[in-house]
Length: 248
Image (cartoon, rainbow, N blue to C red; front, side, top):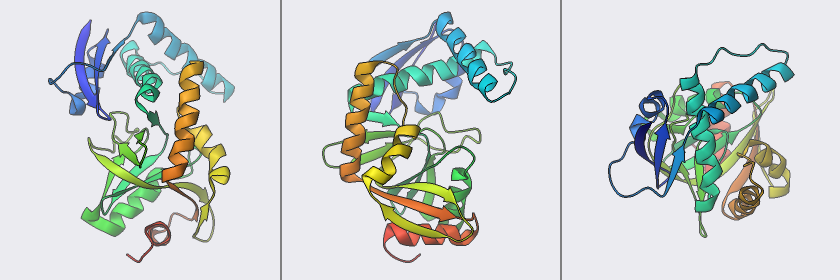
């Protein structure tokens, strides 16, 4: 087995893998200090599960299976087991692009292909050094009693946009495509279907119950918005002004 310990969302995670690739993938989060909060140990059966799951999902879309290596599938298996355990630490994984702007976090989520990465790029172009992508695909959200903190993770999308940092979360914005740019604040009830779709849903019933409790607590500390955008530069300005409460 290949071993390595990683500090992710404030938790020390010992990863025991079959292949070394996962440790290169997570290298920016490596730590040598302290004892692990929990351990993830990967088996060949878990790797085979990821291959079968991928094949089923692609077949449902009319696509052929990918010829993925065991090493790359092990990276997915590690991610899945980390996400399964995190509700024990009041932390959930949310699919989306997390941006830090002026020291505050904005999470953009939407159906696949809507343009989350494109929109956060527009923010970076508009704000320059005032904005940085924390994680472009799978950030972790630690839901405390008084607020939410967004964390970068090694699982930051196909473009590998992200960094090992944290930011207090100010808002979650649901993106939709539109000809004209507009933003409105929405209620938890209006946001909840998309949140439930985009949050990582553990297979274990107990962990899923914890996830739902954390989603409810998240709503108490976070503003929700719906942004209709056309992916032109003006879309970033409309979103920024609407959620930040001021002008660029």
